[in-house]
Length: 192
Image (tube, rainbow, N blue to C red; front, side, top):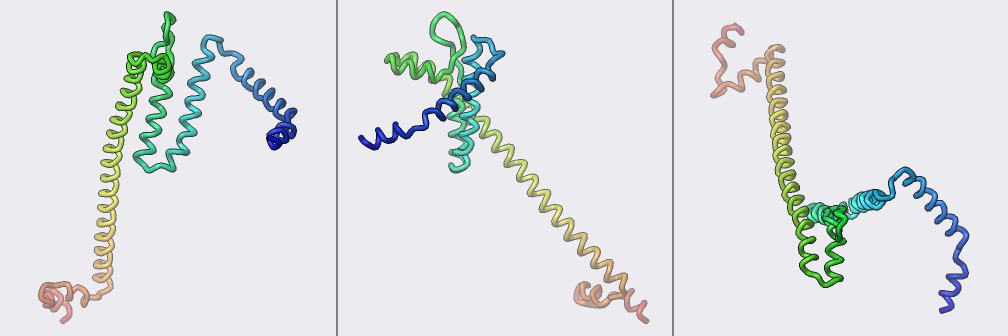
């Protein structure tokens, strides 16, 4: 336990206090014009967006389909709305109501608030599937047009080489391309 006592004695309490007071001043300046009844909503949505942005770093590590699905699951858990308990009718996160229902051993409340989360997740999976299909079709069309452009470029290059051979009076390459390697009658007349 000496290490704990040494750790507490060596803590820079003045620096920690200064940082906390700076954080408190920054937060009070940030929410200065926000009405008190909207402050919890703004804080919740703001921190949910921060969590979703930070989750993108985890998504990059995970395999492609599981990363997107995990981001969608976090989105559904954090931002699915429901009505708050009581008579106020305020909007609250459904995940809090699920946790509240589990803690109060009210499985009906927990399941009824889990349903919107699952619906948001399912709709997100469906939209992700549609997006992947559209993206696949676009990629296929781009690849097809790229292949067609390469074929057109190759045909143009062959045509230019043929025109250059004809313009430079290199009839030997033209004669070799004839069927059966027979010289063309017009070429024989022009050479005489």
